[in-house]
Image (cartoon, rainbow, N blue to C red):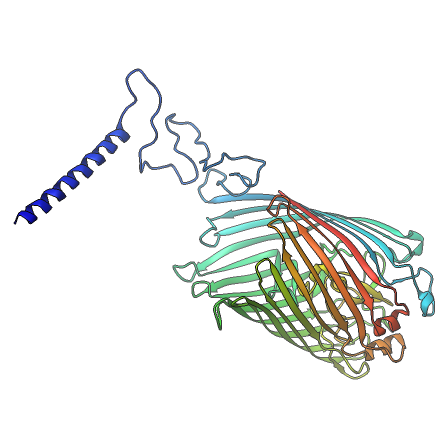
Length: 566
């Protein structure tokens, strides 16, 4: 009985003390300033704000509320402080419409040595190619305005309007005439300017599929889209309509997009407003954490209907149809079925891709007749994380055509690829356009030896030698500001029949050569507002490459890329 009374007395005393403290706190919150003073008191706990973005206009009633400051005051020029121009506060007197403005300057400079035809016609042989030394400079100024409704941190926006004009200047200097322009009288330098819309689209939220913000939205306009993890088949910003969404708490993501392709400026690669007479349809489906946690699987379907007619590029060169043989118009209808994946198994990282292409080309320029497409591509990259070091091994196979004159097209080609794979932008073979008698052995930003007249203005070509690439690299994260990569690749043709037929050159070997690359990235501000990328790559020709170009000179590229963003 005594124990019972003591326990209850203790509880009563404790409750009384809490009540007294609470009453004191409430009295303090509701207290008025001492007599004779005008200093305002802090707002009461749980006092309602006009909205979540602005402090209450207390104590001056009717005053414009200042932006709500957390830790640091806002700064209209500092993108990392609270800023109306960076979407930190709503605009137009609303609570959920935001505006974000960014300005980016991208600079590229390259000193390179490429196989370069002389400006005077020849009959082939060593004298056909002259000095290949070139200097290339390009600068893009990108202004992006993004107006959207909704608090996108936790759910999709209700709607978005985004516009990104780009202002470009490009300079090219070579040691040969007839390279910068078809007309040799135009000299050996070229300066061009372009203004383009790389983004101009509307996004609208159609509906929610669950209370976990699984959703369905639509985008329409000039919009960016990459169809797989690494951009093997399609990676571009173009005119189209895209349906996008997710399901099952974001475990599934899906896209269905159709693009009515715009033409590209020849020297800058930016959009213009002319139709390219090409339609592309893409559907893909991602499944996260399947079949294991940390790994994402993707299945995709692509359709490319390219019926471009006669077209000359901005420098006066014929690019459609390819300037080969009779140069007759052709149409390409190609389908792609793909399976790709990316993720990790413990500390092992994996990226893989496989594509099967089929369809038809009504009059292939190399075969000289209608051909049926049957081509394959496979890629694999394995890496392992060791603290600040990541060793990588990679391989890529694109099938080649073994008989130029039959009605089969067995060399793999993409729609508009930009693969971030193997050496990527550091790789010589991936980053440079290597010319070969009116076509390109390979195009800038592509790994495929597809013999296209132009990656952006010509047709996909499935009668090509294909390519096999095997290599490795080391990625170093030396400091939070400084990264580096060093690597090497072995390259060879899969088949050489089309090269022998086109060049009328027997016994072309398969060896393209060995390339080595080194690059470094430096971020002086620890953010991506200032990015400096520099490096060097070189291709040491193999027997097949030497046979084609009748030269064993080492090809190289020194490059500097900078990006400054506000």
